[in-house]
Length: 92
Image (cartoon, rainbow, N blue to C red):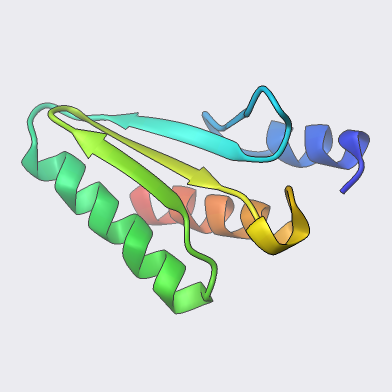
């Protein structure tokens, strides 16, 4: 995916950032407590299974960080941005 396309798509997402190597997009969700962070991790996992495009998820007390990349492509594809947008819709 071209850099201009990545920049344009990223600008349409809420709170997502591009990794330093330009191969992934990440969003950190902050919560009060552990249970909500676990729920968010489960939601991201459910979405990944539903779409066949699995994110990297890290969570702990008060946060859940979700990253999308297309490992087979060695970087970002339409699937990453579509999953990020859908996750945003689910938590809105």
